[in-house]
Length: 296
Length: 299
Image 1 (spheres, rainbow over the protein chains, first blue to last red):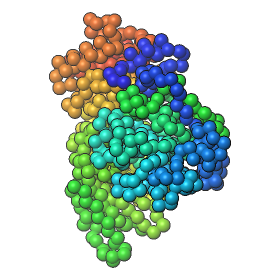
Image 2: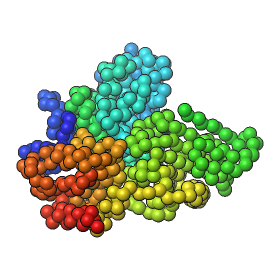
Image 3: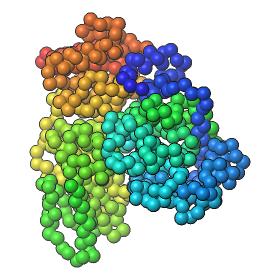
Image 4: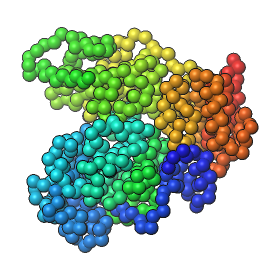
């Protein structure tokens, strides 16, 4: 992607099938490279996740994660699924997100850690961290990473995404801020990260679809979606998450309100860095559980 | 340089006189050390890029408008939800206004020159300051304290700042409530609809630009206006826009055409100003916007 205008996109959309107008918020979709295999993304939702109040139910969280990982890996049990992802000799860093307003729920961190330990990894070889990853000895030795965070709108990158979650591995995070964080895909090339990520878990329990005060959580603009997105392709998982955010924005604002600024980094991770696909036609989206107003 | 002080007055038994912690920004001296059970327990003071340490990438929004620094404080109290007061000092009133137009959904006037309030936060701008007051949990106590802090800061900033002249050129009729955005960094060009993924009209920090929404949501047109330092800059921007959006009308000084989605587009240049309308529901809607802007110019 590069130097694309609305007019060019409209011309392209006119050639494509009906319904393509939705592409106007995600121009890269029209330019994704051809790939033969689809990226599998599993969306699982449970309407009872918050039945007890504002805290997600830990048991339901575990079950959602298990079912999603089984479906993703085509395995019949969580044990077999995790065995295909993590080996007992692995040293595993769980890259979480501690943003005060909307952190990765501890129930997710706990469930991931339990499954990694269940796969035979030693307790001293597993760590959950965010802002301390550069100083964390387990992350320094890590052979495998699990990437997890909630999705939310962001004042500069459009959305806080899985791709953005690795910015804490950068020596100087602000080096990745240029052009509304368009270059976040390049974080995957960092030596501490490259080739190590085994699983991406985008938490859509209570995503934030809009904000007013920059970098402040806006409870007025988050909702109980009660979902998890799981996959091996961070671009595909992020782009499905982005469609959910956009769908909620359309419903809430009663008009097509693009993210401001656009989540350019997700498109660029596809077209420039070739980390995966953002093209819905190249994503195998498997939906499990509650399907009402899923937006995808 | 970042300076953060953690001051636990109650534990230390130190009673500081009110206003004694005045920092770089004069307005901070008007915040109290305590209010109805709340006490200051952390002072915030960030200059320029040091703001990254506080709000990471969110700082870029302020940088894109010209940030001098942020000062503020956090208030805590027994069984009271924490309140954070942030006072962003921008390089000009226009820039404080710009940040405000980024963050408000509608215009209220409870504080400063424009504000918006929810139960858990208040934001407003006045002169070259943009102020955010937030709490993690809205309670009657936190609401009273937040209003008190906002009122004091509003009074502390004695004068109003000038609203950028380009705003007065916006046609009033049909303008959506809170429906415009003032900026001079190209990354905000797509704030309301996708226009281009690059700086197609060469917006710089010397360009005053505004995007505005007209009409109801189901028939919404978007007006883009940009004032350049020189007429030649506006002409160059117009030519680039015409080349990309109306290549079938290479000589037209005000191309008006229906695009592939059935919506209408037009663009024109008025001296140092570039104007463009996107997504017009009808040609008439676009023409009307042109007429009003043209009449304003003649007056």
